[in-house]
Amino acid sequence: MTYVVKPKFHHPKLPTNTLGFTRRDYEGTVSTLCAGCGHDSISAAIIQACFELDLPPHRIAKMSGIGCSSKTPTYFLGQSHGFNSVHGRMPSVATGANLANRDLIYLGVSGDGDSASIGLGQFAHCLRRGVKMLYIVENNGVYGLTKGQFSATADVGSTSKKGATNSDQPIDLVSMAILLGAGFVARSFSGDKAQLVPLISAALSHPGGAFIDVISPCVTFNNHPGSTKSFDYVREHNEAVNALDVMIPRQEITVDFAPGTVEEVTQHDGSVLRLRKLDEDYDPTDKLQALSYLQERQAEGEIVTGLLYLNEDAGDLHQRLKTVHVPLNTLGTTELCPGSGALDRINEGLR
Ligand SMILES: Cc1ncc(C[n+]2csc(CCOP(=O)(O)OP(=O)(O)O)c2C)c(N)n1
Ligand code: SF4
Ligand SMILES: [Mg+2]
Image (tube, rainbow, N blue to C red; front, top):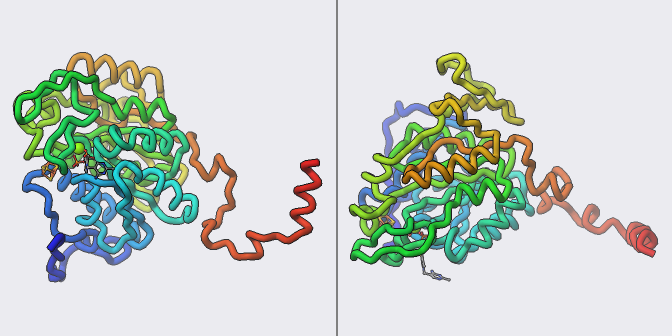
C-alpha cells in the first residue's frame, strides 16, 4: 500500500472556518515520510494557512515534481486538484495549467534537488515569467528520496552522513528568486511554525509569483554535525529580519506591534501585511539592499529568514501577456475562431 487514508471521524465541536470546513478537511492521507522529517511540518503549516484563509479546497491546484518533498501534496489538501510531474518539471506544468485556468490557486511544492539541480532552468523561467503561484522549495540540502546525495543547495564544506565533504559552491535560491523578479521572496524553517504559517498565508494572498525557501531537515540523511541543514545548525544560526502578520479584509485587526517598528503593506486584494522589523535596517522593498544583506549574513554563516523581498507591483504572467480575464479553458468556438473576416483583417495588417 502506498498511502493510508485517515479515519474520517473527528470531534463534532472542532472549530470551523467561514466555509464550514474544519482543519481536518484540509488534510490528506497519512504521511509515509520518516518520523520527524521537516517536510511533514511544512504540510501542517500549509493546512493551517489554507484553513485560516478559508480557501475552498476545490479551487486549489497542488503541483509537484519528484522527491520526498514532492510526495507531500498527498498528505495535505486531499480535496484539491493535484499533479505530480516528472522530476524538475513542476514549473512548466504549473505555467501551462495557470495559463489555461487563471481561476485556480496554484501551489507548487518542490525539493532542492527538484528545483536547484535538475529543475534549475524550470525554476528560473517560472519566476522570471511571474507565474501567479506560491512556489515552495522544501530545502534539506540532499536528495532525500534517493538516499542522501548532496544537492546543489548543500553548503561548501558541509559533510554527508558517511563523511564525504561537499566541495561545490551552493546555489542560494532566495537570491536567485529576487534577481529573477519574483515579487514575494521569503525564507523560513520547518521548525518555526509561528513564522512559516503567516508567510504561507501572505504568499497565497500575493498577486504575483511568490517563492518561499523552507529549510527542512532530512532527519535520515542530513541531520548530523557537519550538516548546515540540520535542526541544531538552523536553530543556532537563524537570523530573522522581521515578523509577519496577515490580515485578510474581513478580519478585525487585533495584533499589537510596537509603533515605529511596523511596516504595513496593503495588497491588491485588500489584505494587509504587517511587518515587525527585528532588524531596524532591513527594508524588504529595497532589492539591492536585500541582496547584499543576504550575501553578508551568509558569509558569516547565518541563515536569514523572514519576508526578504516584496514588490507589490511585480505583476504576473497574465497581466504581461494581456490575456482575457476569463479562464482560457472556458472560451468557446466563437471566441477562439472569430471567422474569416477577422483573419482577412489580420492578414491585411501584415502586408
Ligand atoms: C529524470 C530523473 N532523474 C533522477 C531521478 C531520481 N531522483 C528521484 S528523487 C531525486 C532527488 C530528490 O531530491 P529533492 O528534490 O531534494 O527531494 P527530497 O527527497 O530531498 O525532498 C532524484 C535524483 C528521477 N526520478 N528522475
Ligand atoms: S529520507 Fe529524509 S527527506 Fe525523505 S522522508 Fe526521510 S527524512 Fe524526509
Ligand atoms: Mg532535498
